[in-house]
Image (cartoon, rainbow, N blue to C red):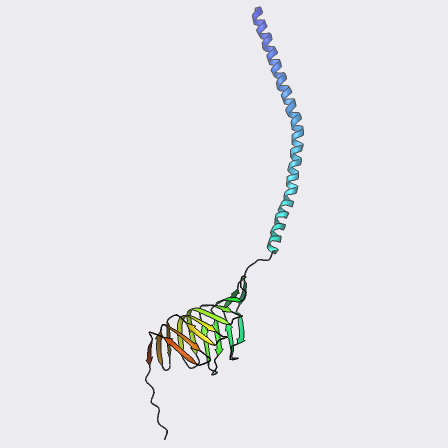
Length: 221
C-alpha cells in the first residue's frame, strides 16, 4: 500500500467518525427534545379530555336554556266555544274544531270547521257551518267560507261559498252565488242578504225560483 492510499483511508476513517459523531449528537438532541415534548403533549391531551366534558355540558346547558325560552307564536284552542247575544238580546253560539288567535290581532280568531247556532227575532232557529272561518270577537262578526250551509228549523237549506254574519246589526249576507231548497221549492241567485230585524230575505238576480205544487187540504166541515 502506497502513501496515497494510506492518506485516503485515513480521510475516510475521519469522515466516518465525523458522521457517526453528527448522528450521535442529533440522536441525543432528539431524545432530549422528546423528553420535553412527550410530557407536554400528554398534559395537553389530558387537559383536552378533561375540558371536553365541560364543553359538552356547556353546549347542553345552552340548549336547555334555549328550550326554556318562551316560544312566540299563536294561541291554539281545541273545540272552542264562544257564547254571546245579538242586538235583539237573542243568544248565539259559535263552536269550531280548532281555533287560533294571532299575535298581531288577538281579537281575530281563525277557525277550522266553524259552526254558528242562533235564535232569530221570531224565535226560529238557524245553524250555519263552513270549512273555515274568521271571527272578530269585539265586533261580533263571523265570516264563513268553503261549502257554507245554512239550515233553518223549518226545513230550509241554503248553500254558498261564503257567508258573513254581523250579530251586532242582525244581518247576514253573501256576494257569492247561492242555491236553496226547502218544503216550498228551490231557488238559485247571484247573491243574497237577510235582516233579522225586519225578517226580510232578499235574493239578487238573475234568480230562478221553483215552487212546489201546494197540497190540497180537506175543507173543514
